[in-house]
Length: 385
Image (cartoon, rainbow, N blue to C red):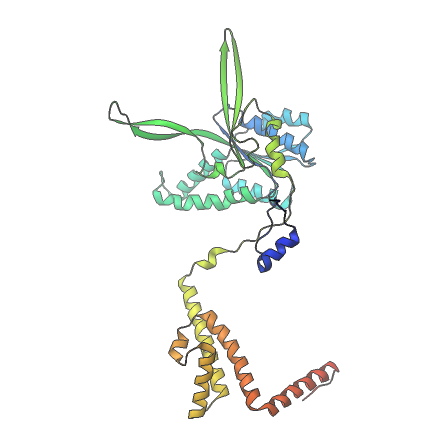
């Protein structure tokens, strides 16, 4: 069976009215977002610099590279960037407030295409300490995470993913611990179960690539060999996922970078704000007020059309209510939702107009003729009284 690729026209025809809501899959985020985690001395900073330089050359950027430096380590990269002929701008700080401002400048002023953060662990630690100072406490309580985590996500993690420039982030590694019962002793023992970045739990996995950096030593007789190893823990492009590189360079990550930068699309997927899904007490009161207004308008339309309390007018009001709202009970009409009532009000106006046009065709024709005459006269610039 031959597979045919759908054209954009065919997609539009197939999606119909949903064409503005769904769109053909494309690369709407053509930016390299990577995280390097590792213990001290594992080569995170140096490797991120090499990748930044290679990326800068690949995209033919003419702008400086910006580094948010929490360790005063940028000075050791001065030679590397000078040899590459690339200017390096630095902001030395450990606060989330400064990091947020740095990302705002990158986003709005577009002073650079590439942003290095080294190390995000210090920013997270400073944020936690700042919160404790604010709350005048030495230790965090369980409910504090309900404040810290959402704040961190909105102020850092979301911009990290969405901002339109390349970001390379470094973070200190720490051990993960678990516990289990020793089958020999019957006692519960704690053991190291893995390595994770010292930062808010989900931050390390927000970028498209996560790399674990490690330092190794080999002693051969009197000689000692030191090297760094990079293991790709996560790669959304799958080009280098799970691979290991010794003394890594830009070329090792280039296949994934090529995939992430390919066929950029300037379109943006529109998102609907979900805050409207949550109903507050004020929302409920507003809803009730709006519903009462619409009900009053419905009542007024009925009374305006058939104002008397006589049997004939009452019958007409009941019949047209039943036609529009499928009930002749005012109490039942009051129980309907606001959307249905608003639609019913518009339908009621039309039905009343049609009713009187049918009952008094001569007056309807006179009204129609008068309306046309008024419009024509206004177009000619005359004032009709």
